[in-house]
Image (cartoon, rainbow, N blue to C red; front, side, top):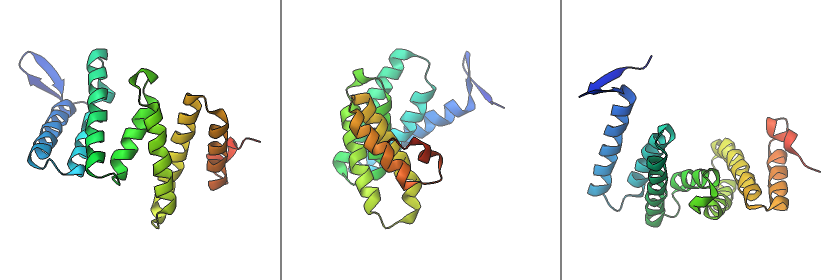
Length: 170
């Protein structure tokens, strides 16, 4: 059930109103705390959620450019912000190449996989597997097929008995 809220002459889904409020709140947060990497990270997450629902192509292009700027700022403030790096990288390996973000997304996932491999937190295993999948996809999109193959194999070996195991290339 989608709740509709009237705003003047147009009916708007309730989630869209809440999304605008969340983005406005996080914009205020980054204005009040311009040195807070987490504030930029959350702003980027909310803008990315909005971008995923956009139907206007030009608006989407602008939103994607804005996203990368927001996450770049978050990482300039704290290069160890795994959440910002992960979101930026995931978008970078999945958006069209004309955005020019693919190579930086692959570099980000190379960093992320090392960080997660070294983590003592055992709960990051699922995120590590997902990161390897994104990294392999990035290598494929760059045309680096041998690196992609090695990465898919590493992923399959890290998760025997999982759906990733069927990805093993010989």
